[in-house]
Structure formats: structure tokens, C-alpha cells
Image 1 (cartoon, rainbow, N blue to C red):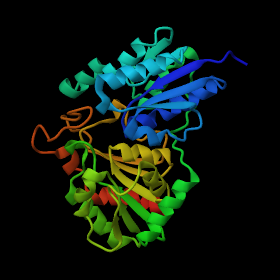
Image 2 (cartoon, rainbow, N blue to C red; image 1 turned 90 degrees about the vertical axis):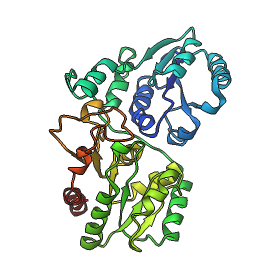
Image 3 (cartoon, rainbow, N blue to C red; image 1 turned 180 degrees about the vertical axis):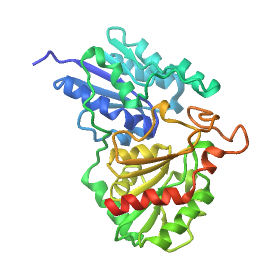
Image 4 (cartoon, one colour; image 1 turned 135 degrees about the horizontal axis):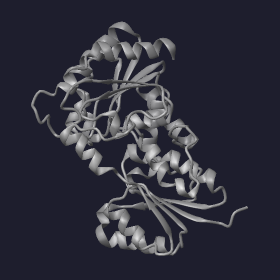
Length: 341
């Protein structure tokens, strides 16, 4: 048995990025079965790893506490005398924490900012191949024996969350097969237009007998409410915890989602995904990972990508990357999953 090693992993945010770190967590445990493995995450994303069996301790960071809170957290972590630190975020907060862990051997993710900038701003592609974010994370630990097991994302919860989710479904008269739609995203250019989702819903209502559940955060509830045009549509946006949403997505026949945290959540619970990509592209590393998925995007547009995270508006005013994705094609992808799932 190896000497007990103390390991710290840092990834503060957000939904997708934290879930994309779960293969790294799993493989760190496999490489160091007897180690103490701790994780630092922002408070709001803590539920995503709260019940992860590969972790010993989880430290929550609240950005509202500012620099004093960051200093206090760093002092607490320094007392643990970590041997290895893996910074999967590499921002000024995580770099500050790592700087206070003097005895630790540390590794951080390299974000390939230059390649990314060339791709976004000049459309010159210097990526030799498409490397997903989980694979980039795993490269951070390669020198310490952390390998890729070629498996996907993970998300864990207690049985009590299943009970809560079942109660929510019963309360909303959802008893049969259903489809989940997640029309929101953090940025405008990552959102398939609401009228496109409306067209998709009309086709689903006409051609299937499935109920439709709308999911999203509290800010997206009003946005999603515009899609409630039938008693077969249930708007649960902003009404669920992250883990309740995970259970409901896990029971869905298929989910239709933009490039968002809910897309990665769906891949973590092994639900078939129909994803819609607008201003972002595969080279950036965020396509559905190791999952049953169909991706819709407007290929051969010279202006893609216009951002690596999304924008508040289309810089050219035409929004072709989303407007060219038609609802019939998305419906056909949903139908194929319904016919085979």
C-alpha cells in the first residue's frame, strides 16, 4: 500500500465545468486508492459533487466573502499539508490558493488561450485535434499517473432525492414517458431562439403522446413560460435543486438542450442528448462527452466561433448560426431517440 498521499483538486465553477471534472476525480481515486482526496468548489455548485464517493472532503468557496474569505479558506487548506495539487480552473482565485500551499507539488490546466484567440478572432485553427475538456483535465495529472479510462461523467445523489423528484412529478401529473427541453443558456448566442423551440414543441405535441418538461434556472422561468401552450407542457424551470433536476433528467426519454450546464448534467446521468450549438464549436472542447448524443450546428459559417463562452448579441446581426438550425431536423433527432430508446 502506498504512503498516504494528500491531494487537492480545484475547480470552482460552473455546472458544466464541475461535472466535466468528474472523470479526473474518479481517475485520481483509481491512481491513489488510499489517498485523502479533497475538492474546492463554489458553494452554489457543491451539490454536484456532494455525494461523490471518490472524495474525502469538499471545501466550499463563497465569492461574496471576497479576499478575506479566500485568505481564510487558503489558511484552512494549508493546514492539510497537501502533497499534490491539481488546479483545473487556473484563475486568480485558484492560483492564490495554490500559492499558499508551499509544500505541495502542483499542476494546473493550460487553457491554450492563444490557439483559442486565433480560432475566435481570426478563424485560424491551430488545434491539431479536438481534445475534450475532461481529457484536458486528465492531462493535468498525467505525470502523476492519472490516466483516461475512456468513461464518461458522473453524478451521485441519495435515495431521498429520488423520492423528492418522484413527488414533484406526481404533483405535476407526470406519470408516463416525457421529454425534457432546456431552452436557456448563460449567453444569448448560445440560445436557440424561443420561436424555434416553440416550433419543435408543436411538432412534438402533434406527432407524439409524450409530456414535455421545461427546465432551467430561476432567471429562465419566465423565458420558458412562453412555451407553455398545452397541458402536456410542465414548466419546472427555477423550481428544482440541481440534484432534483438531475433525477428528472435521468428519467427522461431524451433532452433537447443548448450548449449549457444542463447538457452536461444530462450526459452525466446517461440521458440521450439532442444538443444545439450556435456561436461555439467542437474545438473548444465542450461537446457532449462520452454520451449518446446528436449535435445540431450550422456548419460552414465563416463567422463561427465568435466567442468561446457566448455573447450577448450576434456581432454581425444575422444570428445565422442558430437561425439556420431548423426545428424539423431537431425533431427528427428526437424521434430517432424515441424510436430506439
